[in-house]
Image (cartoon, rainbow, N blue to C red):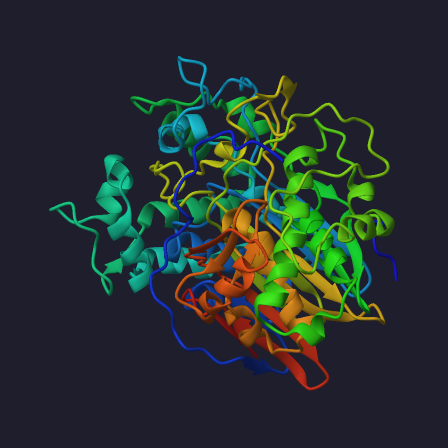
Length: 569
């Protein structure tokens, strides 16, 4: 087997904003079992499109194209071709990761999100409009994956979404609920005409929504490939939408679009118990932070703890340590020398785990000094991240994809192109303040740079280097804690993926200890406060999609907090 992989106190620069994608209800779900293949995705129509592609003999990569393009229609608040994504791919021998993260335009400056007074802009003042839009990467990523691992024709895998855009689909209660809570989207004329009725109210759940403009875009991509997105009519539409905003225009150019390229990066793999955990390295902080959390938990018997205040204490303390390092060290590796090997080094993780007191919270963790670092000149910055979507796919040949995809905040920059899709606000994942404590921030805005992410698409191999599980979640910077919790649930507590996904969410991002409101985690509050934790009860609207490979077949789970399903053949 050959796996291309790397061995094993920040100040918040912008004002804290609401949690990503508010909850819209919870449904009771049971795990799904199949024998050949499986798709776990955030909407039943998207998952069904993926299953149909797999049934037609398509690969995991073929299914991912169909799932993503349908998600653009049925879950437009979370992802789409106006955004970016990270993909982890396993072909039975090699782990590969593709970086389709958005990039800052060539004219971007570090002061992009500072107001006239030199202070960071308010979050939504920065988000809404063209200023926040990064050069989209999703279409290039999908094409790259299909060219490399696809089996069916490109036109065939695009067809399900094109047909759905033409024929229409019914608005789900979740989409209607999020539109009802949305404050900015209908200020965009194109989006208002699409999502709202003549009175300005969100179109009701059950309404059939058609998107002929998006259908035309998809047919153009089917005929001419991704180049038709990055040049020509669609590209002109993107640029004019970004630069034409009346109060907050951006500066993206056609040259920015033409220059965009997907980056293949080494998979970031590390041990946990008998397993190998593989994910996406920088510019995502997800795999580093998840492996740091697991590296701390590996020093004790998590199986003996079970869900409860003691387990929440350890996971939260491990999260504090991971987020402290994340705030200081992680950014686009083309611009910053990220000490990746040092951050997941076994000796370093043991030294960090020794800082955890079983009886008392450390409060605010400080970043460590990992080996192999080449610089310690950065100022720390936590930053804000928001909503996303995730898909987990395993095909009948054992190929697997874990892909997390985003347009950042719910409904992105609140800009809809005439080509039928929303644009991202990914650039607000950069630190708004370029300098902290007199030092440049690693994740500051720079021309051509990819903003730091917390997306953590994960593939797990067993002790024999065989595929064991595919996991991931949306949720902004909370993704790291969602994925870590799910991995503990599956690997330590031996839960099926549905039960693991539905466990109460908990953890810390190096601030308060955050427990999911309205769940049994609320009963852990007193026990944690007795250990000195500052406990906050918050909505934690994860969207975990997990598939576990067993001797009898595939077992899948889709987070009950959202409308996703796990289905297959």
